[in-house]
Structure formats: structure tokens, C-alpha cells
Amino acid sequence: MAIILGIFGLGAICWLLFSLAVYALPFFAGLSVGLAAFHSGSGFIGAFVVGLLVGVTILVLGQIVFATVRTPLIRLLIGLIYAVPATVAGYQLCFALASIGVPAGDWQHVFAAVGAVTVGLTAFARMALFIPPSAEQGPVEGTSHSAVGLRSHDLRG
Image (cartoon, rainbow, N blue to C red):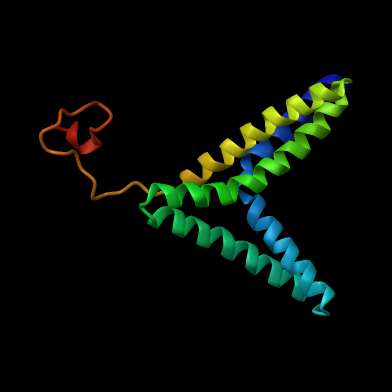
């Protein structure tokens, strides 16, 4: 029974890691600013409020900029800004999980690196999900229509 619960627990940790990967940068920034505010004498509640506001602001600002900017290079840079902290967090978590089940140190680093790349790519992909579908983009004239390009109102007849 313990093995089954351990597998479910590991699955829950991995699910949390992939679901929350894009929030690594806002969390880190909010935590850093909150700790700085606490150490400057703002108290626990003031530090919590300041940290929460900074974290939410960074997340929303990144989503808005990523969704409105059309230049692929700038989108890539913004996606990397959010994916790199997630990659570092993924490496640390995967290394800790690999140290539980893999005795050799080199293989722990290999599993941690694979996990870090996977988490980083997931964070970048989740950041790309914040782009709303553009309503003004239609099919280009002179090109053939594909099944992917059809909208639901095109199929009604």
C-alpha cells in the first residue's frame, strides 16, 4: 500500500510542478520583495501584501506583454524570462526526487537535467497559452482552405 501511495504522491508532485511552472518567476519576485519589505520593518501583513502585489503584477504584466507583442524575438525573450526560473526549480526538484531512487550521482544529474528541460519547455508552452486567438485573422485569399482553418460557422452551411 505504501508503494501505491508513494507513486500517487510522486505523480501529484510532478503534476504540481508542471502546472505551476510558469508561476516560478512571479513567486520568486514576490517572495524576494516581501522578504525585503519584512526586513525593512513593514511587518508580516505589510510584507505579505507587498509581495502578493508584486507577484501578481509581474504575472499579469508578462501575460499582457506576451499577448500583445507581435515580434517573435521579443516573445521568445519574454518566454525565456519566465521559463528559466522554472527550469532551475525543475532541476532542483527532479534532482531531489532522483536522489530518492537513483543511487549513482551521475544518473541523478542526468534525470535532473532531463526534468529541468521538460519543465522549462512546459513553462514556455504555458506562457504561450496566454495568447488569445486573434479574431481578425482570417484565411489568406488565394490559398487553399484546410480543415484546421475552418471555423464552426463555416461548417453550418
